[in-house]
Image (cartoon, rainbow over all chains, first blue to last red; front, top):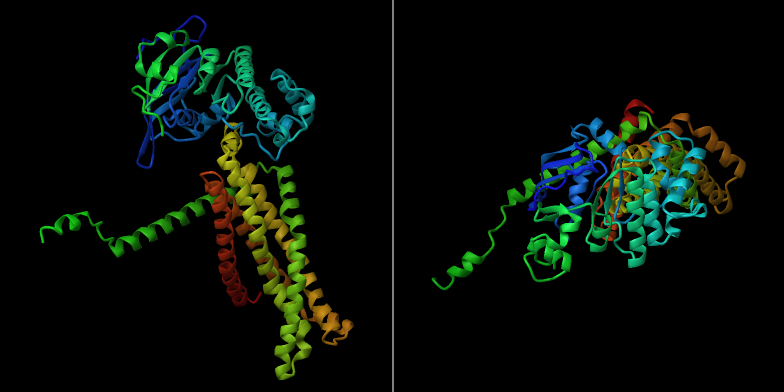
Length: 263
Length: 273
């Protein structure tokens, strides 16, 4: 494991999100075996790791979508154990799901402004106006606002999902495989949008991905999850000189090495 | 003896039948417990704020209005077949004149709510389970939670309320169309006088007949929507999981409709409703 390099002049002192010794099993399968992780305000942390190593489970535990069997999640220094604390966490976080998870019964603008309409009690006229503004930030024109989500391409769906994640100006945004299923050019455009919007909001970001191009573009720091534990963490700039065989194998996409392919 | 020992050692231990029975009973109890907790949470969401009115109205349209054709068609054929059967059976002891009375009694108290319930178990419960199941496997329900919206309030309560309110309305439609089905056959094929048929029907049916059918319909509506929501919420594993959820929702709702129909009929008979 590399030395802790999380403290830096750009980032806040108190971690906005902290996972301590988080364990999670599904039946006999132990997925997380003591994950320790922290993200500071304004910091972009990318979690990498092979398929089935528990990356999605980690952020689902952080968001309270799954309850850890053991360990604790802290948000802004406070334990996110009660329903009230979890509600507070969710009000200040945004999430971009792997498949977009857009509501197909609603129009694009209703998807984007869902939190404004149903959580914050904003009127439909004002919510639509703000949705169109959010869509503009992800380079989608006002004509997309009234479309159904099924009418959008994969890249457009990701951008709508990004607009939904940022519209309420969250302090922390989770990105679950933001470029999966996109061509390299669209993926790069989505990465650019993520970087631009996270910086514009001054939010912290936690991204999970397999895509090394995304890692290099998005990450301030990289953490590698393997066999349910964080086995390496360091600045994104150090990823090519990590000294870790696991990181080397993953970065270079080799089948040979300490990580067994998930076949 | 020695040669057979390795084979004996490799043989799987025979399952103890008591263990199997115990495991099955415990699994059934666990499932009943899960259903009870889920239904409790959703019913609580139905009677406490916030109610999503737009979503509720949308569900009323989907569950109630769009079910009219299937329920209407069922009712007209059942009413017609019922009239023919009662005429045939009644003629054995010169009781053909009771056709209108028995048709309206049978439809309003029993066949109207039960058949409408069973038809909607197929159409609505499966539809709800498939829709919620697809939302579950595509992480839309997780997305709702991250947007601080509880699925039991936004997704399940509007569907359950819509089913509870629209099923009695559908049963009123079923009753009317069912009686008209009996009327058409009786007047057209069995030489009944139309005015007399309708007068007999109107004079014989009581408020209790209608009310008992409507109470049953409201309960069936709750069962249909709750079963669809429960199975959809529990679905996992992609398209196969969603299909399984839809099947389980229909089977579960149909069995519960028939069982609760018997229980409610027993209660109504006892209290004179």
